[in-house]
Figure 1 (tube, one colour):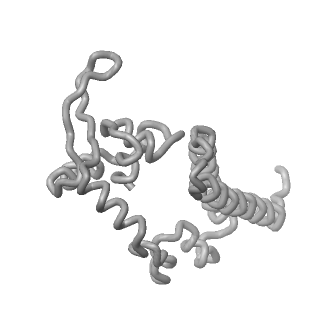
Figure 2 (cartoon, rainbow, N blue to C red):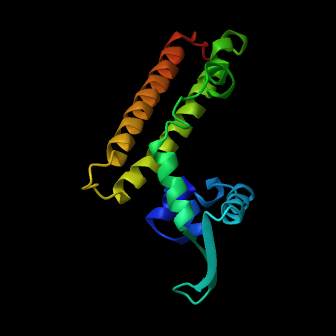
Amino acid sequence: MILGLLVDRPDHAYALKRRISPGLPRERLINDGVLYPLLAKLEGEGLVTSAEQRGERGRARRVYSVTPAGRAEFRRWLRSEEDEEGPSLHELFIAQPLVKLLFARHLGPARVRAKLERHAERVAERIAALESLQALATPDAAGGLGPSLLELELRQLRDRHAWLRSESARLARAQPKRPAR
């Protein structure tokens, strides 16, 4: 993905972080401990190069650009079926945020509702981030699927959000009312 972003245009690390996670608050951006070593690795492999450049405000920044070898690697990866298998089935049971709800009977209705509501908040944050990316995206005249893929992801997230909200409301209705004292 980093190579693809740099094929589109050279950039400095902070701008790459913003492009990867638009609409997210600063503290939720990709971790520097991941991004900078990855950029250094790509540079070490000769896929990107970097140079200090002065920004609009006069501050020096290291700007990364894709090399011809990086463009070739990006095209090779893009044409391949590499990374397209989708997650393995066991990942569903270790990485899916809702997997804990398989054991909801051990939590009690109030805690289950709290988990549903917190997950709904995270899904709403993701929806907002994707919507801000969608607002920035320009239609792809070359027939790319970027806008359509964004719409697919948004539809799935909106469906999940609606389910989380309705399930939380169902649990609230099913919870016995306590008499007022």
